[in-house]
Amino acid sequence: MRIILGVGGGIAAYKSALLLRLLTEAGHSVRVMPTAASLEFVGRATWEALSGEKATHEVFDDVDEVAHVRLGHEADLVVVAPATADLLARAASGRADDLLTTTLLTVTCPVLLAPAMHTEMWRHPATQANVELLRSRGVTVLEPDSGRLTGADSGPGRLPEPATIADAALGLVRTRDLAGLEVVVSAGGTVEALDPVRFLGNSSSGRQGVELARAALERGANVRLVTASIQVATPPGVAVTPVRSAREMQAVMVDAAATADVVVMAAAVADFRPETVATDKIKKVEGGEPPVLRLVENPDILAGLARDRRDGQTVVGFAAETGDADGSVLDHARSKARRKGADLLVANDVAGGRTFGAPDNAVTILDRDGGTVATASGSKAEVAHAVWDAVLHVRG
Ligand code: CTP
Image 1 (cartoon, rainbow, N blue to C red):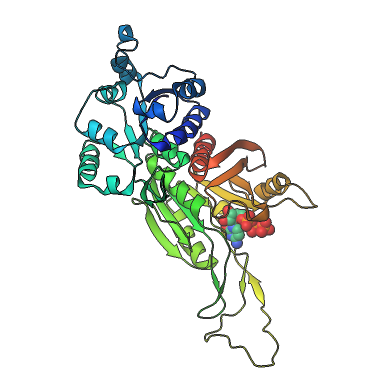
Image 2 (image 1 turned 90 degrees about the vertical axis):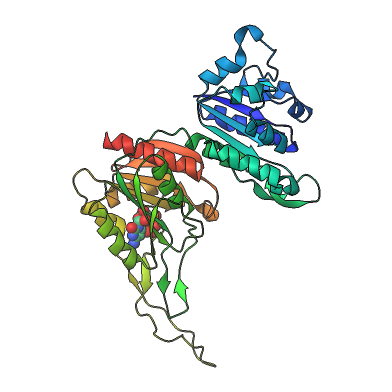
């Protein structure tokens, strides 16, 4: 894909070097268009070295090529980061006073602007009106992050992280290759009650499952998300069914699987639950023995879904593994793939609490025989897309 990366004149321009890296590493060719002011922050040599292409900012550079028209027509996507208050104003009013703003008037592809400025400038009615106008014209304007700004000040105005910008931008041009499919995804960690206030739980944040749902939605699927104690927001447009225990999750998943084309068990399901749930709060008895917990086994939801899957249905499981004396992460994952009978098993290494709640993940996607279908690493959104690619691959 051909991407134009516009860079505005703000201190956050240096973060766009990382954004450029992410876009080129994902296999895209990127043409950087810095504004004149941005070259005060990051020089042309950085952009040219990292992109392997010219970085021009003047309409009068390479006039013979009519660059603003040609580059604009060739582009599949435009990303502007940081978009300063001035750049937002110039884009909103249709100014054409440098190569970037002129090009913005010639493109027909999706455009994403990632603003960064001081909080006062972001909140100013003039800026907010410009953002609203740009959005009404179909331009995607990200909300800035909150946090420490250039000086001692803090508040909304920070440039979102490069990975967030890259995900949002690439999401705009994603093909709707899951259109017509009904998918159900479980996310989070089940909660097994001990008494009315206490429970056994786990550290799953639900982030990977939520990203799977978001990615499927972006790609046109009809998505149901079954959540257990998640710590992240769910995407609008996804039907959400909250549950608590493994058995509640099983009932909802089995029900949803009756019509789903793809079923994904990304939730961390408790293998055991307390044998009894006290109806009243368990009391500490002065001088008495601590209570002993007796556990009983929970149903294996994934194995059941895989066993009972309908014709043409794809069942995907996850395997959170740590290596040990008996084998590596992959050894354990391969035997789990064979044991569970799912069409795909997405294995990740969780040694030392890695991946729980983290924005990044690294996985190996295995087939039913334990063979490697794909590997993926990066943001949980990127991993989610790799999982859907693998689903489409096994569905043929
Ligand atoms: N899973 C499930 N029901 C359970 C336990 C796990 O559906 N009672 C699913 C998870 O959602 C995941 C896959 O099985 O998709 C593997 O989960 P994991 O916790 O890694 O494996 P376990 O089956 O619990 O095996 P073990 O704890 O022995 O590694």
